[in-house]
Length: 184
Image 1 (cartoon, helix red, strand yellow):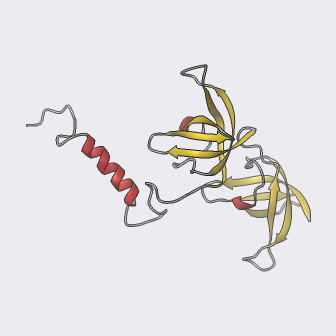
Image 2: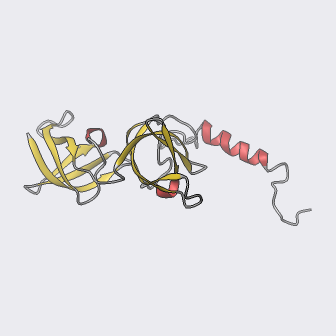
Image 3: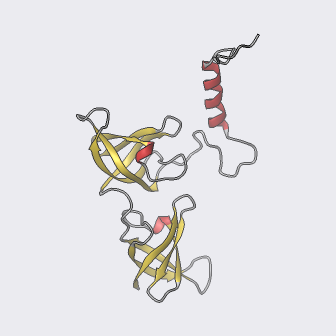
């Protein structure tokens, strides 16, 4: 059954949110059920109501459409390096530079290799003859493997990727740390 409602909240980090239905009830949804661009607070959405697979007697939203977050172009993240803060997004055979400051996300990593992304293209602030991605938001998909961040909530620390990256940075500074202090 097709329904309509307004986005109440959505957390890309947790992957779930709520839509306020026309009758005022809050309806749960998961990011994997979003079709097209992700929604932002206040968007009016259309969706199908189906019984929850996890909670008997509850209804959830599926096949959610009408999101307006991010740009109008759709591409795939070629690669993104969180500690450098940039990467590339592909549209067909073309790759476009993306800087972390143009991505709508609160936490790193903001994008994942292979992830669908919505964005606009603008002129580079450094070289007007080149293009950059603007108004970028990540969608479903992508390789969220441990490439520097360990498992979320891992009490043992940062994970092998982050530890090796930090070791490389320390080794690049040399045995004395590269500081300008007056040690003796």
